[in-house]
Image 1: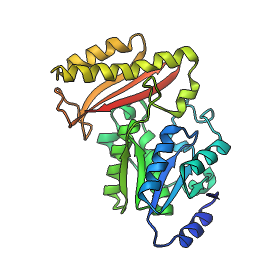
Image 2: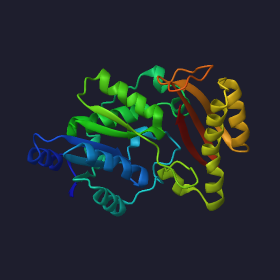
Image 3: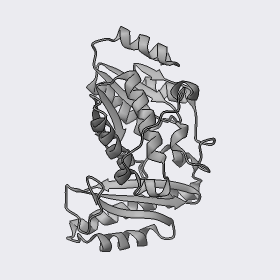
Image 4: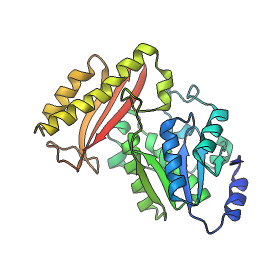
Amino acid sequence: MQILRNIAEVKDFLVLNQGKEIGFVPTMGALHAGHESLIKKSVQDNEVSIVSVFVNPTQFLAGEDLENYPRDETRDIEVAKAAGADAIFLPDVSQMYASDISIKAPSALASILEGATRPGHFDGVCTVLAKFFNIIRPMRAYFGKKDTQQLIIVQNLVKSLFFDIEIVPCDIIRAGDGLALSSRNSYLGESELIEACKLYRALVKAKALVSAGTFSSDVIKAEMAKVLDPLKIDYIEICDRELNSINQIETDKSIILIAAYVGKTRLIDNLWL
């Protein structure tokens, strides 16, 4: 696996692999089994796979955890290599933001759910991904469903800016207790890890209600809130595949999304029905 630290090195790598199908897995590092699954999927689908590790400052709001966000370059390199990546791109901020151009995420999608709590977050996501897409020019790019709103916004970005890239959604990877894997799980203490599993249990409760014939969004959200107690809930929302809020669940067309605080750590999870 090649370690690439600047854009010129990426360009040289791409010249050497000209004509091959390129898969791309963008990450912010602190790689875990969820990222590993994305890399392995890319390796399976493409002739060449590139992983990026970049903690993107423009998607963090003032007071968020930019400075403390978990970083472990040595382990990231080991995980990417073990998963079969052909290259890992490790740029610094000065390369990615040599100019101050930015891209706005569509307001209808970016102002709800995560965007309501973190205004401007998805502008930063769209800006950095547009840069990466232009540098790497992949055939396919891989995103986890855990960040469902991000996934849908990226699909919109690619369509709107005419990027010739297939966005590949990948299933959530969970620990044995159901907790969705996340780099921010490293912030949680032992007792908080137990409490964090309430997000998954609330989704399991919702799925059971739907299986039993309950389709009312209000009823399902109220029952989920009971499971989450006493966690501080940011939102419980039930949407269609375009993130429009819906009153009744339709199977194979709906998504249930949660954001809640476990101590000071804000976690998200979701279930596609």
